[in-house]
Amino acid sequence: MVLHRKQLFFLFWILIPVFLMIAGPISAQNRKFTVVIDPGHGGKDPGAVGSNSKEKDIVLSVGLKLGKFIESNHPDVNVIYTRKDDRFVELNRRAEIANKVHADMFISLHCNALDRRKTSPQGVETFVLGLHRSKDNLDVAKAENSVIMYEEDYSVKYEGFNPNEPESYIIFEFMANEFLDRSVYFASMVQNQLVTNSKRINRNVRQAGFLVLRAVAMPSVLVELGYISNREEEKYLKSESGQTSLATSIYNGFKEYKREYDKKSYVFNNGEKQRPQSAGVSSSSGVTNGREYRIQFMTSSRKYENGASVFKGLTPVDFYTDGKTYKYTYGSTLSPGESKELLKKVRKIFKDAFIIEFEDGVRVK
Image (cartoon, rainbow, N blue to C red; front, side):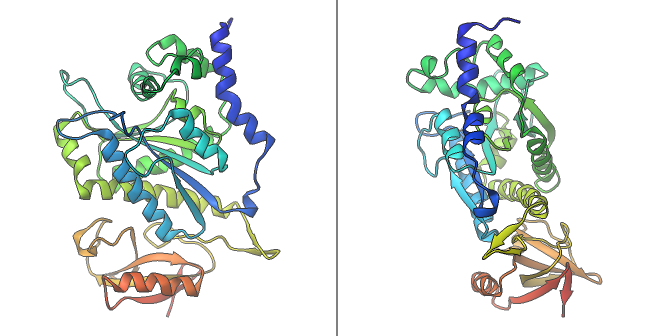
């Protein structure tokens, strides 16, 4: 197959982050795990528009909540946002932000939509970079990639790529994504949490040609939080409880991914091997070896899901069981000092909260 000059230019542009990664990687042993949260659209680009809401507002709210969950529970993680307010950020700039800090994970947040003349489906789907195998996947990619048309001189900047021309996507056939396995692994965890925890309709993990994913040199996913064109789903996407639940589910997926990442990595401190910090580990989601500290704030004979009103806005919450009793905890740290800081936070809501210890996943009494 012969590539045209414009396609060759585009291939060169889109492989630049891979060249940068090879030329100057930073050892994971000498820095914090870094996650970049990318709320799509913004500013002059509203994204998909519902009956009374805009994609750019919904994804920003969910993104900020997700970042707070990670920051509150993972002191060993550095959270960076491509935008924290209503501003327009070009696609290549979003990738540049992630590549510049050599991020370990890139999470892009979006909402789906169909033409209002059509009956809109519902559900969540999590995408990884790849060659779309269906027209539906291509349509989603075209909609999200069309953001480049808000940029000045986009036809020059993204030489040879037109988001509305299917033939432009043939270039993705030539791109081997070194991070695909890890991206699919993370995407599967996120999708599972969105379905089981947030109770959303499952539209599965999919592959498609997203420019923003191709341009980042790290494991990455693009999450479609739901259909803003569906009236019922739009109400959920706009609601505080819906946004909190979605952010919690994505966080839970991140927590699982980070736990597996830590198992395979070592963090070195003063020349000695130290266990990496892992947040929110409990019998509700698995255990790790070693001593950890959590904040216990409530016991109940009932099992509650994250986001339940009984938690008074405290999230994400884990639990362990003692006989038929559920004991609910917040946070997790390997540091006694950090556990005291967590306790101060929780006691503002639950005055009787206290610190508990676990050894190899078992409560120390």
